[in-house]
Length: 396
Image (cartoon, rainbow, N blue to C red; front, top):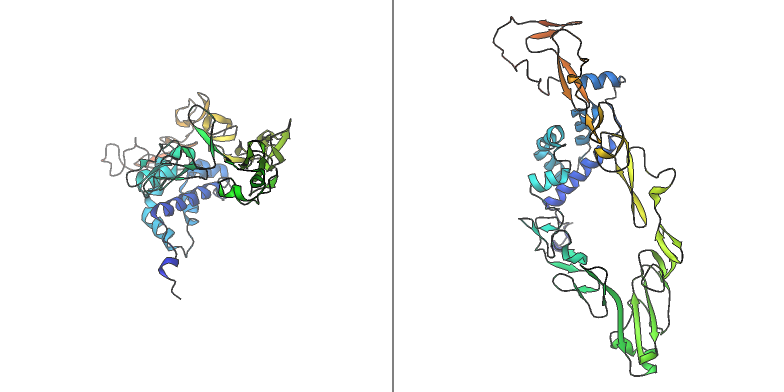
């Protein structure tokens, strides 16, 4: 059965494909965060093979879970760009921790950073920091498409969404911007008109509400109510409960009939509950908690942390094995530079790795029980890497 052209499934854009692949990669990192090599001797594995956390074994496990067998678009992108993902994982992750920004924006140029649009990633109308003055959506935001124009939210209009629509008024909130509040005022010629339907024709009505000429409290998502002001023969509509309110009789968090989930009433005001202050904390030991309005989010600690209070290696409670606090944050310990040498066999070279080290016999030597035995006469021309250079990743 062939669908009409307008009903055919729209092919995902390159940016959407790239973003979905990165989202799955990041989820794979979360899913494998607490695993190891699975060999039963974790200490030997980490000493011999470096840490699982930074290993090719973990990368392979993540990559294998990125695409369903039937997802042609995903598998095609992965096949084309697998070497780039490997390069980021093995060499560039520390310098470019944001995989989406490095992979989709800077390298493949399939997407743009938030607040920018189009082939050249130009700033959206109103600027990239606050597109459309925070009152609308920038067409093409974060993609290589669109024209950067503003689609304004309800209540706003104008090229930058800074003007109020009819029925809304400007309510300054700071020196830099204001809010268009959902109030409208229409003068009625008589008391009878104020109590009837004529005010609808004059532009004063509440969407989704039957005008009753009385104050009402209604649940979300309607979140509108009507009030008749007979003084000066006017009718007045107020719209949009505060986010703290489940029901309301006015536009602020002091006008709530009931508080929304995640908010609690204090001194006749619905205020946000700080779930992060709860005991025990709501997040896992490897995460830190960030409070948001009405809820909270659990974010992963930095890989160098054993417990943390916030984002980055400077917020670690303690460092994982192979790292120590330097300058207030967890830094890799260079075991090879310590006074007590970790590599004990004669002629053996030590190479530092993130969080660990590797002991390897130099070029021209081979491993014996407690020494590195020379296999090539001294002075013979080296055919492989110099003994002073670290072995290749494959050799390790």
